[in-house]
Image (tube, rainbow, N blue to C red):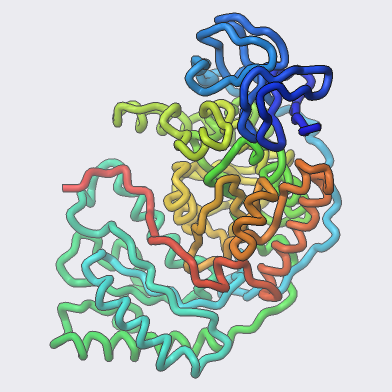
Length: 503
């Protein structure tokens, strides 16, 4: 008998663990009236037009047609409910749930000047002020890796931090502070060990002084290509500066540090109906273990929490945090409205093919990756944490933008849950991939690091998979293990969030 999964006893729908053919009889003598794809919703009772469709114990939407028991419910049958109001959110009063006891309290990381979060990798990051210089820098970095990097065995990599910002933009526009803040923060990521190297062209709007402190903006850290006579001179200057940085980075060594020096990100992409019951809850349990041990965990994606924002508010530790949460949600509501869209634009065709009917259903599964810990802080895009613990970092849901903005906020490792599969990666931080289904693990056996599909088959509990993921995080953070994306060097373009006008 094919297993049906009902998340909450109040749910009037369930999803099959495998494709369910018409005529099948499942638990409680439920006869299937049509072919139901894996992960898609089956009506557990007769429903009439206007009735609520309930999954996760919440209303996903209202039916615009009658549905018979045993029939398929698709996104086209649902009217999305109104999002929660933002003017009545309230912080939690506690007591907050006890978090599970973490089996480890430390990891092996790279200390950084001035303390703060530690690095999980030792990388020379080279920031650009404008996309125009990327071709020259990419050529130089290739030469650096061939000629310089072998001389410095304690340096993991050299990464060109290319991006599409810097010129042809309204540099003083109201929202230009968002990409500028992100780029300023990225330069200072702990994985770069405090070494600063910036490459500019010389005529762009984003000048080095906008990225650096006055004492940092000097010829030891900044190269302007228009100051050099010819391509060879540019390349020679880049290699000379890089070598001075590599010499210092090569002196870094890992040391045993408490987990309160670790900052990681949780993100999901290419989600499906299983993401919210396997991969994301397992990640949430791992997050609870990390937070209990003192680590900082960021989770994000504004449109993917908007429909559960009242649930997040109830977990916030104080009123100021709730006010910041409401402010970020309201800003994004207006941002979407200005673009002629709303949160309903979020689910992709792949999400829907994987059984997610609408953003409400996607949000309930997405929030699961945050675990149960109280929320200590809310960050604006690219802002760095001032507290430790579980933190909501307000970013777009786009994988590429969310990843870059979490990195700007200081994560040095990311855990990425997926149901449909994606080769997404970050160049300057390891990314651990977690599959929601064993089918995906079997298909992408050399891209998926942790299979959470064992939860759906009953072979593991959420807690067991979450504990396994916790140990994987510690091993990767400590350099004892590398996820597949890092082994293959898979990474995406650095796509910082830029809502400001392009001129």
